[in-house]
Image 1 (cartoon, rainbow, N blue to C red):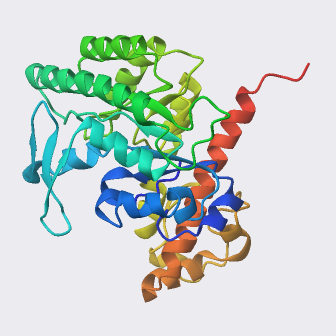
Image 2: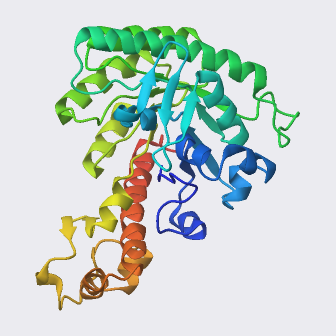
Length: 336
């Protein structure tokens, strides 16, 4: 899932995302709450209409962003007091408020408010984080069930216009991860995410936590690993049974001139590409590889042209989406 933090997948227009085959993108509750605000978006018909995106949207709860503001936040049982990174203004996020914001945004998939456990975290810290996450998951669910129809675009022909996913936390402690997963499954949520990964832990530990939790989550509901990863990682996780993944890496790397290709990672800034007329990835059929050369992409970077971020991002997103398409095709049952 391409990440559209502030109502945009950075440097890539929505029609281009559609042409690349993106079926769902992410919006960020924390950022959209601060700017332009969830109430203006609600009044304009929700995030789909506001950003002109007709396909699915998932919004995170804001928990990870608040977690990342370690010097600007205070966590209590009620919620999180934090200061805006934009202007220093004070705000208070509770599970109920996070759900209200996401309902107002009109996301197809809403995430329960959680407390992301940092790495490394000792057992006492992980246990406290898990306690908060479980309490907040219950409050998120109760509030969601009571208010998920409180939007003008709710369709009474369906039982619920939005879906709620819970988030498995527990740090890097297997038993805490299992405990969290089992208790969330008892809540009978619409889907389940594994959070608190890609926060600095070794890749082997990431895989270990996913393998520990995945068998405990219902196979007939979406299973989502948050914030991953490199191309070989997402293919590996998909083959383990992960249904959904997201990561800023394709577009973030693109803005730093790093391309993912069938021949490995390509730093297009390198001087060796100054007169290279071959496509960025000879095996790729994306619009960028069909039209532009490595030499031209390098020139755009060197000249500081904004088009550089756009073309690099389009290629990287096409590469990632292509991986997932191949995985889906290989996992499809043979026709009868």
